[in-house]
Length: 210
Image (cartoon, rainbow, N blue to C red; front, top):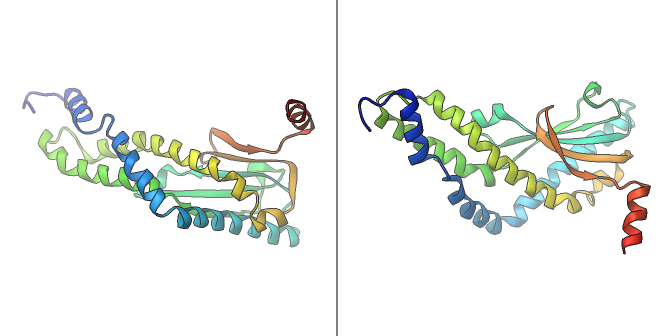
């Protein structure tokens, strides 16, 4: 790197040489790890979800919580900063975020995020080639930017698991709204639907198309 390179040029060079498109190489490792540990990964996810639903059912028996309307899978930026792939799962009744009875568990998506954390650690050794123009704070920002790609992979995994989640004993026993939905996104922020219970109109449409 040229000694005269300014901060912006250094960051551009750093990104092009050590960050850009590197995440694509991680896909192979993620897929391999998933195939090798598929049973334990899926059972662990289902067990965490089941624990959430069981916790909600107990709170309902105690009269502390109504029918569950929303189950939210939260991506936590603060955890990413700590090199943890923790997702928070929350069960809410009709009061949504105003639900005063907390019902939450944590699930770790390590099999997806491990390559990201390793790459970011490697960047810490490369930054010294840039004469202090690239800092650890810069790498933390890069980590958060790159983490979104891994979050999207995690959401797709969650979506693929929905049929199994709906069969969990805790979910079946828990009192829930006919319109219950499962959402995934950043904590109390924008989200996307993993599952929405089909309404009468949807069922009629599906039946007509059968």
